[in-house]
Image (spheres, rainbow, N blue to C red):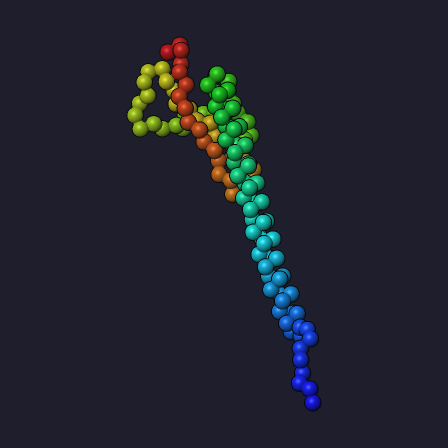
Length: 115
């Protein structure tokens, strides 16, 4: 009588191999999805910073900026010391409608030539 020799994989081994393959594929897809999510947030934040820099430049030129997503104000800026005469502190705030993205705030001083 000949002994039983294995010529291939059993059904249980095939099921275990497919399960391991699917778990690995799931982890790769999940990490890929998260990286695209955070990449999108980073790109939106970078666009907000460039937008705030442009708004800051316009505010330095004396243009008044009141927009749904941009606010330029000098009333709510507090400084630890009083600025030199003729300098007015102001802040530009840019907000996004996307949840989880904090506002971008930039601070600067405006020189009042007529003071």
